[in-house]
Length: 387
Image (cartoon, rainbow, N blue to C red; front, side):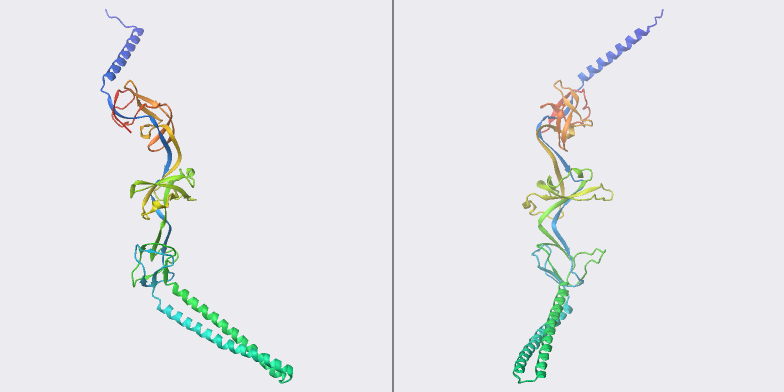
């Protein structure tokens, strides 16, 4: 005789099977080997909110000049070598200019001749003026005729005009000398400021020429003032509104990774730069707070800049790497099981995140999230503790 189970009986059977499966799973998890995890204990510390450049920055000089002579010509003398320290106004290079030297000599001879002519002509003018006055006195006494006195005055006037012309000739000759000297200076390259010779382009006997409009030519001499250095770095355009002149910053150099240089934001570019296949960026200039820190640095060093936006002391913090999407974390509970937790966060950087709520001091937060089996509900044991 076959019995048929009622619908209520089937429903009760299914519930019993589900409960049995849940109990079996709990028993299995309880017997599963605990996973080993790395944890960090929630504690107090400093959390800073910062911004960093998107691409490598560069150490720059406050004054750098790529110099060329005003006129082109053959290099006659190079007075310095690469690496030399020079002072303002020091002669660096001269071009062949014998023709201009000859023209200057002619101009100076003309000036000397004009000056001597002034002495001769103006002396005659002075004598003629004295004679005119003597003739006027004699005319009053009736010793000479009026025509004689008039002739003396006319002669004095003419010689006075000749003297003025001679003086003008001196001025013209002096102007020709100055023009020749100016032309000669076009072939001489002087240091516009004190600095270090970075590079010299060209050798003795070679021809050099300044860059014509629109055509870039190598400079004759690259001069750098190493006494004043700063860092220029590109920042993402999204971060630009949060950057202010005067903000505290830290400079690190690839050449000196162990050193951190205190700095401050000096300038923010007034435009967004677009580089092909790169993010749109805003260039900033950052100056060293202590000028002594620039001693020994080389222009062109690659540099990174971290700008401090905000800083909070003695706040609860955990490693930023321990936080999953949605501010979810794993905590190792007192019962040895991993617990999922959602926390409220504050300031954050790549290293630490401030915890505003959801955690207490001394709780163990899991940082080895990449390990297999690390999930909520699993038993776990501490393999290592960070920090």
